[in-house]
Length: 438
Image (cartoon, rainbow, N blue to C red):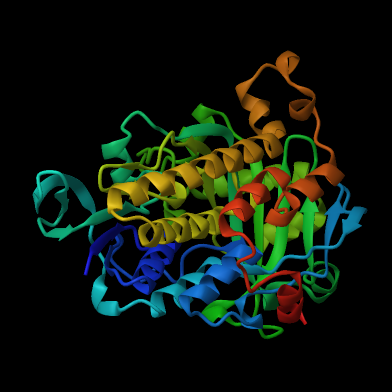
């Protein structure tokens, strides 16, 4: 039985691990964090293709997978409704998907506290014409593991990618996403009636905010037990990012900082800025958040997805700005394509070449689309105003509502690639999604 070593035990790694097990591989997952990840993350959007791949793995996909907003509604800075439109998406939480994928995978093959240091890819037997490679992985605790294939699903700072594509580095986009999650019960009754059943957005020039309901603690979707998720994209230059990532002792943590280390004055300034920039409904949600946090927004575009017996997928391969709302779905499509290629091809080397050929163009197009949708945000601090393109100079709220978080089926340059590979496969077409919502 061939053995795969999956580096990274988050959603991308678990999707790959479960799919490879389904085709007869033994899979071991190595996660650098020392404990369960279910409490991490916030809201995410789903796509029909993601639901279908989870169904293929054997995970029950029912109405508890998420919450369906009645509409997408745009507010102006004063809080008045600018525009409203249907919102045919199921919005879920990171923890809901992680729990389902983690529980479906054998606990004895999932290892916490394993940070990859390096790996070697050496010939170990086989014939002269068809030598056999063997992967040996070394972890920071001194332990090792061996397998026939190593898969980097270890995110934007991937150690696997750093070894096979050392020149590929994330590029800061010029803005951050402030985020938060509040219990449904924390919303004042009047505000709850106004916003909770809707995906609320606010698009003043130079900023963008989205808010929507997701499953609550323990993936609870009962009324009164859900949560409300918000994301606010705000321009920040490089010096400002360094300041945001500096803790109370004066230590700068690079381009990311743990939520609990964010200085109180940083949060207070963020709230003050929101009062000047956003609709009052958005400000209230921010003020009700116990622990806001932020992530810097990056672009990452890899020219290929493998080298010898090492492959990368998900955010280790491509990082698209979150406006397209398909980070997890892209990781799922990567994992499915890799698993299918391993079935279709006579050897691992040919399978990796086929996988890379299928998914590299898709990832490039996702990144390009995300850059286009977020162009007005990045330009605020990265380019002089006189050089801004029409897209960078002004954001049209209706266009933003249509383009951000659109379904794959509504993005021609992406769906043509997905359908070319997946064909008519898929249990979760529009009718099935409508059934879940009902």
